[in-house]
Length: 237
Ligand code: HEM
Ligand code: HEM
Image (cartoon, rainbow, N blue to C red):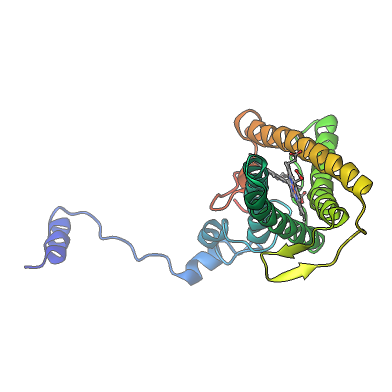
């Protein structure tokens, strides 16, 4: 005899009520009719991690993808620059060519990211934050965006000033931003290094704040930037 039918018989003999019919999609739709963004509550949970666009309470998949891809690429950039430092001249040029291509990719993603931000609602900061914390968060984010543009642009201008063309992984060459000029190259070299230090410092502050939100303030700020999470606050609960 098959296992399933034995189990069913056993349940009936012990007088256990039979399992009720699973609620149909229609039942669930009626039950959660007041919830505007999703057909059902279970949908809301399943889709919690898969919303394409931002909502006033959560970053969507595109914003998350852009955020974390840029994070990874910035780490790659610092690594490539550090690796290039001790290499012999020819290998150094090869490593820096990769550094330049990744840097241009960051610039393109930063443009996409800002465009996507303008087309979407921005999740509001938690009400519990003090006014100075709000100001700090806004200024840090603005500074991060500024650096995501200034850092690659200074690198691109530096390469042009040195007379080295910038190509994107060998697929195509970008135009020179400034004419060849040794004094300008030196100034941009210092600028690029200083901006990198500033970026490192601001990112450290920013990451520490994100972790503090999660572990100390115990709010949704980090969770809503992570994929496959369901916010514990906001309307999508
Ligand atoms: C977010 C993007 C970028 C980051 C975080 C970054 C970071 C860095 C860092 C940390 C260094 C080492 C600086 C030092 O040793 O003082 C460096 C060097 C360099 N970067 Fe970038 N960079 C970025 C984008 C670019 C771009 C787009 C280009 C050019 C198109 C570029 C070209 C260079 C070059 C040529 C050097 C070597 C300078 C030298 O030692 O002669 N960088 N970068
Ligand atoms: C290269 C490193 C990073 C850069 C350039 C960066 C950049 C940014 C920017 C510009 C925003 C503002 C988004 C907006 O308002 O449109 C942001 C948001 C955020 N970042 Fe980062 N980030 C970096 C690393 C990190 C790390 C390591 C963490 C976590 C430990 C993190 C967690 C967050 C969170 C949770 C938000 C959302 C804040 C909110 O909802 O108001 N970021 N990031």
